[in-house]
Image (cartoon, rainbow over all chains, first blue to last red; front, side, top):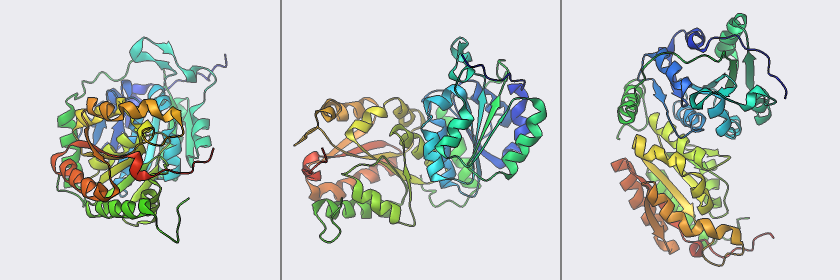
Length: 204
Length: 179
């Protein structure tokens, strides 16, 4: 089996470094640890929609949001398992080319939530080259903490859509209790969004 | 291929349905390429006020429309009956998030179908949607399509409900499919 390069980035403090002003972003996060980390980043903020199911839907949701809010920066935070279950959505994003969309994939190369089973990216699979093949304009992978400044510059300056793979240590995610009340989350998100944007549809 | 010089029946009712979508303030048309929806797709791509997004698989469209709605805009998912099967788990979103979800489904595998691969999913398309809390309406005749879509769009967007309009294979017409 091909071994992926060793990762040395701690998932629990990478998102605040990549998003020093999280209030400036709209976030969608995929299930499991990625949503814990994203909820910790925003403090369960109304600019984050977390998911705990419908695996693979985070990137399409982020795309829909990016297309309907072209003046806002939209980021999807997911893990390697979530990304792979909806891997075709990278193709859809590449074709739609939303310039305001960023995907940050926290790749621990395993399925921690279900018992640490080995993931595809522990072996031969490389998410960044898949994204390149899909046609995503800007892609990057980081493995070490000293690469974080380059990743910050990538998120700030690279043309969108952007796909950043962060190879992370196999730790637990942030110890943060996220809001699992789905009705409350969608009402909060939409109200917050509509109050802060001139939308074509505020009737619902 | 669509006949550009002499609009056929499919073009006529598709244009009527398109006008309904425009009037309903639909901004996002997510689709998987389909012969029965070809005219609608073409119109959506040409319409400046709409964003037409081609998907790799139908369930992406469910997530995309939820994202668009969170961003304040309405959309529709165009797919054929086989695609409904691909959407089942992702349709959890319509129950969990209670967002307005409208899909237009062209039926295959139910009338003059040359391709038996289409039949198993066709037999359970409506039931599959209903099992996932999606209301199901069905147009049998082309002259009722636009009125039905308009009525269902009202139901969906005024009530934050999920609904599908199935277009019968008979109204789409018997095609000379490339073998």
